[in-house]
Length: 265
Figure 1 (tube, rainbow, N blue to C red):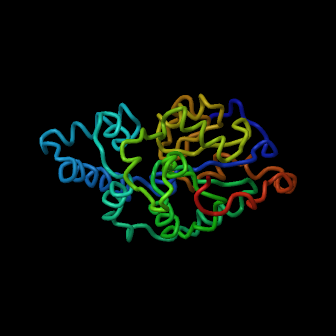
Figure 2: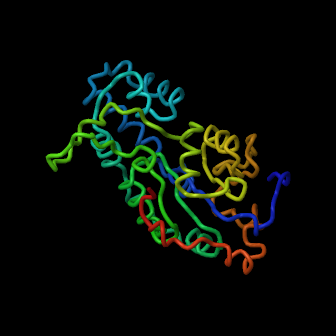
Figure 3: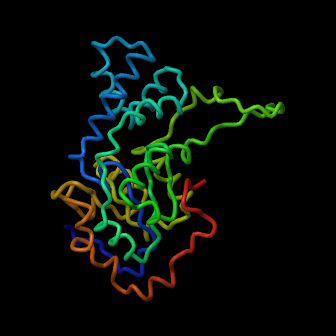
């Protein structure tokens, strides 16, 4: 745990949390299941040769942040909602159980708390519901938030067009642009915000954007993270200053009147 550059709790106004492999452990197996579903989508729906799928999936992920963003970047066309439905629709959500320990920790934190994930809204809501955390956050910044569906200027027939954005560039973590977009959407001061994520790449971009950073799922401090948590349950031991000056901090919490507990826009 790094003690450099710490600030007081009164200066922490918001906590941004990644979702997958951050609020629940990597050992759940969702990461591997998700990758398998993506590879199956690439083979079945995009007709990519099965012998190339695994290598291509990993290379696109490394270069573009997510395999989905990479597929769009290299020219594949598909509907975003269909991709998410296929990739997340077969995930073993039953493996996720209510986490009362994490729930109590989150509810005891006086700061604003917001989810920031590359996943779609439906998946985020399902995960939070399974963990029993659906009412612990002010809102969710997700795929639909960062990548709003474009509306054609001449669409006057009242019929929603779901295909026009199928080739739209995808914005996602770890791009600095995505991090900065989340900061704007959440309306937070990065110098007074802590970002929790399991990805070293995401942590590096968040630090570049001015956020305080916490790498989750590792006991090793990965530069430029400010803190390292082996488990999200270790927050209070690792960063007790979140709770320091709690009474004073409560007066500074921005009420969620303008941002409902759903997708932030």
